[in-house]
Length: 243
View (cartoon, rainbow, N blue to C red):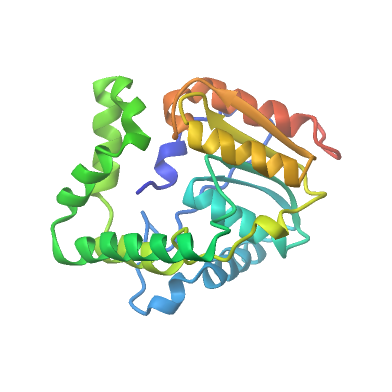
């Protein structure tokens, strides 16, 4: 439900890194394609790789939140130009085939709602999810800005994203977690589910660093300054950085 706008103003112009915010297909200012094949994870990653080539960006770190984190992880698995990963509240997928099928059915139901009912109905339901309960503590002006961003989306793009690259339909990346790519996992102290996922990821790939900040699922909104400092501090100590 988010776009690159949620990261606007997060990082100070005085920090030494360049950040490129890209809206995923079907979101924000990126096109909403009609054919569902454009929304497969592999197609989305190919489009992102093509963008970096056009911009002549030879290598990069990837920062992704939630679904964006799943995309970043899948991207890093098969792209040697990825120098490191920063994943916020993200998962390698669902290992159990039966649970994946259940999640697909659930996501297809949400997609059907998006295709047949006003977007505001979906947003209202989305904001009531326990996963986002901690956002109720945000200032009213921030909550309104987030809601307006969600309401600015297009139903079809969100529906296709759920159906074609939801957690149930993405491959199970648990056996393929990168073992040598520097990786930072950022999770919220109130988000017990993704804390557990982060710990399990580190057991599989010990080079992973986990940072827990106050807040829930969307740490970069709830603890913006701490999140930005954590990202920049981690980047600053990675090999080859010139600060």
